[in-house]
Length: 434
Image (cartoon, rainbow, N blue to C red; front, side):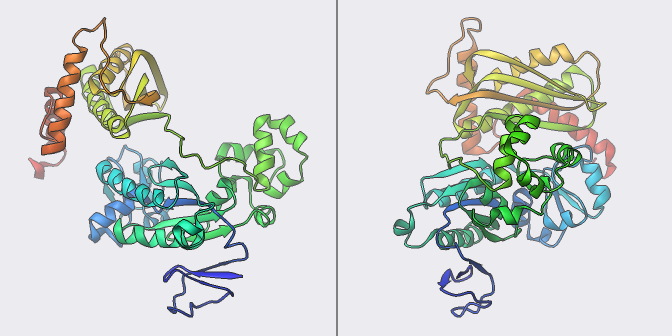
């Protein structure tokens, strides 16, 4: 059984508890270590890790990434998770669970820079890199041993060390024979972990776990499976495939395959994101159309900036609202031609907003574009809006100015008005700021 030292990247032919070469104890031993080549790389508490990297004083503190008390937790560091706080939890509940948590606002520019650094390192190892999200990806390292001068396991261990040194955060790695098992393995040894799981051992490994252990089975689906008598993955393994298909349709076939650790999906570097969006939860409910439009403009700019960074444009604009009673409203419209411009996104979504903002209280607003295509070289004209080319030119010029002189180099009147209102509210809430 081969053993890999993750500190000095030395492979040993036999299992050992201490590396004979460097006396390191961060070892991974597995009988199939030399033959597995599909990896899942997942950054550990990515947003929180970036915040702690950029502010070392936060290192030993429970950190939550998000907005005000009425917002949602974007990320929670591992210390905060020990108290029960986690991502997607309402911020007020997270602070109830972890009163001493330090709330840090998101820094999307820092996240994008770090993600780009990590992707560059991964693509240097193999062209088969499938980006899943800003903080995770699959790699197919088949046939790369000669080019990388090391087997996949050693290459991945070196990648993890390089990310720590150059980017300043840690990652966890899962190594297996397919994407599903690689993803499963990456969750086994977090944070700063490395786990291997072969296809041969997968059925026995998965069997005692509840259905929710299968990546892709959510809480509601898991509860239904348990109610239907499938309390463990072993129960799913014992069920005839026809029975599962009869009960759950295509999902039944998926369950039958995943229960045994089977997954025929390839690592596809051509996978593209389906949408680009931004949303915010308000500190206090908003009903006035003008205030909602101010928030919509800020989010339209953010969506446009993300689209430009990804070099995509979308033909569908979607408006998302959440009312004070937590009901979600989604409205969308299809454009004559795709766009990545904030002005076009805003003007389209504003029309949708006007139909909904009739005095109702809202706690959240969001906007996004979908049906994405690679961005065109030039902005499209619109016969119904002859000024669109002029606005596009102005926006492109503003983008150049912001890139050269900083994000505050160019501001619209709407942005200035919104910032003034926000500052006034904060001064009212906290007299020390006035």
